[in-house]
Length: 397
Image (cartoon, rainbow, N blue to C red; front, side, top):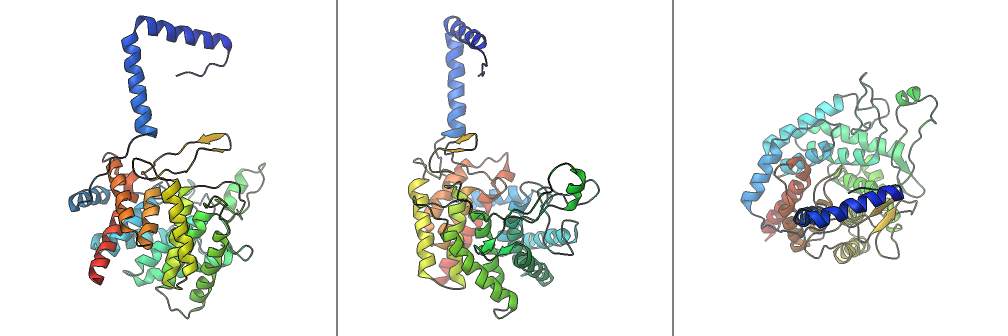
């Protein structure tokens, strides 16, 4: 494949293709078949659902147990969230590793002892040991969930969760529209290096996915602290007001704008996380309005994002974003966040739609690549949550 820039280059390319087609038709056909197979495998591959068995789950968990990451590595937070769900299931090794990792992180230079909050984990530290990136909402929310969960096994870690909530309140919360800004300003160390560049500022945008994560994290926090404490009361007010801002991001098509700038819509993680957050609010304040909002988002996902062969596309339709044309892709591997399927499974189980969650996990298990287990931590998270849900239902019966 070539991209000729002149007419002469185009003619040479066409002559070469014509000559190959006349003289080596078998080779051309073979190459075309290889290209077609690679294209289908990458973009248009059919789903290959596999049954969910105890053996497949244990095999996956063994592969994931051997992994280790540093906080600035791409999959570190996904790995920590997998440890958290394993710890909740009663795995003592996962509990110990979760507590140890979070204790080390709190003692690192990524924690700001003066204002609170963690500097960007993904950007890490300079060679001089100074943080590079700003404090980002989505990382603070995910870490708040982790420290809240780990406080069940090491109560001292609840202090860090308390400090993170205070940071969210003092530095990222805004009243109009109610919600949390994306980030603070980057550390001044970068400003000193780039003297001629404009000074970086905080990102005041409110994004759907990060604010939904913040709601889920604060609901988790409310459930482990005194309901009458000042922070608990503020957190309760904040999540109830934030969900109204997220509700206002609804488009006429039924999906959500990605941010309050209302420039781009139709991202599957936004719908999944907002649905999950709206349902999670039921744990502290039942509301049929919030429940119906979440169920309507799940219907949009199932009707507009479904791959006919199984699983879900990341976008419902092809769209242009900047200079890119994005085509729907079924992506079951993780990126910085757990896979789209994992986020949808979380929302489906919150809604009690067990069969839909099971079918989605079967497709994700069929896409699992044992040679790259680090890219399927989200699958491990989804399977653990699914198993815990079934055990809870059986206990209730």
